[in-house]
Image (tube, rainbow over all chains, first blue to last red; front, top):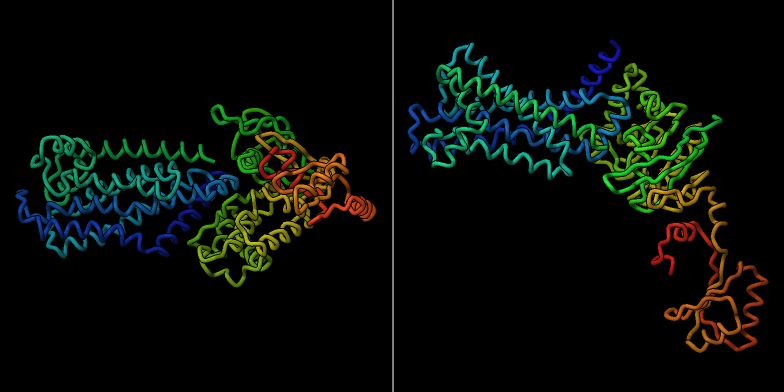
Length: 253
Length: 312
């Protein structure tokens, strides 16, 4: 009992610390918003007219932009976790008997909340560009659900990478695939309009089902199969990231 | 106060096939400063990591603060504090917030935590900077804050891994003062350093670590006695002088490049006068004379077998 309350108290302390980091470094929010917004602008106003996607292009591209923003906003988590590891901060916590769970869950919760705040801005921008979703309250809830699941998966993977990387720069590099993969998914163009090899890749990579599911929630009825694939991907990646984080945390002194 | 703070026997640690600790035995008396001295890569940090429960040794045992390292890890952790090689302060938090975070993690009552934080800030002369983010602190201030964070839990044994590496001389002296005060309060200090002067200045006992083995242990005085005594160094303006002097001073060692001669002797006034008289009697001109007494550098170099530097 006292072990649980100690762990909760420590988690709360670590969470407060991570919130302070975000508040004192508001640029971390800016990063999550500005690049996806720029890409969105490019796609909608410069290139978008050239795509035929069967619906209003803003409506098509917004879900992709939302997921992209999750990937762009994750950088500070990777570098922050890595700095904790390489400067010996985590060793200090280990000697104080602060549980691994407290440290890692604080990072995940703070990252998820920070991402959701960034997404409010991103969705706001989409509305300014003419985004008109057909979703009712239940669909919005579903959309929120899939976004949170995707964010958890990406957070855990990033924390694993951040703990394992030798330097903050190295940790930053590991985030690059997260930024590039959405371009090779159905975020901005339907997969079946892509070239042969890219199309195969786009169809089978995790971002496509996740974005498709989000798009379906926001602008039409979701297909059960796609949603299941998306949830399975999120759960699988979360598990991999979680195990990776646990292992790296315990291994490196 | 009395008794043994740390007792380790046969500590071994290897990474794959690289042996880092090759059977370390050591004993640290409570309330004293123990310095582990060694060059980079000797295994100093690994020793600290093992003794502070961060790493499990491959073999060997240790009792820290009266508790077995392997079976009573929690009790050991509760009694120790560690300040690592890099200042592990949170740069985005202020100095005060860093200390309060430690108090919260130790689950001290709010008022007590605030009291300890204020006291430590004051003691380490950080009160003025308490409200500024730690990222804006100088290297010396960060180290002080780092140590202050370690002290929030009032540890009985404090491990300091190279506490002054990279600090300017002034900050180094401040850190030494702080360490001395801690010991005066009854804390036991286990210190690693690559600076001989630091070990000489602070430590009650010094152990020299090289390639994962302890090659010597004792007080600074005992270690200095272990190596050959002092000598007088003579430099000559030319080779003729060197040759002539070497002939009349048996037992001396010559250095052809430097045109110098090392004459064993303790540098006492009588010995010096006798030496100079002899040189005068043979009309040998000496350019320069210096008396060299052994310091820990000599001990260190003799023990760790670093040929390059010992030729200086």
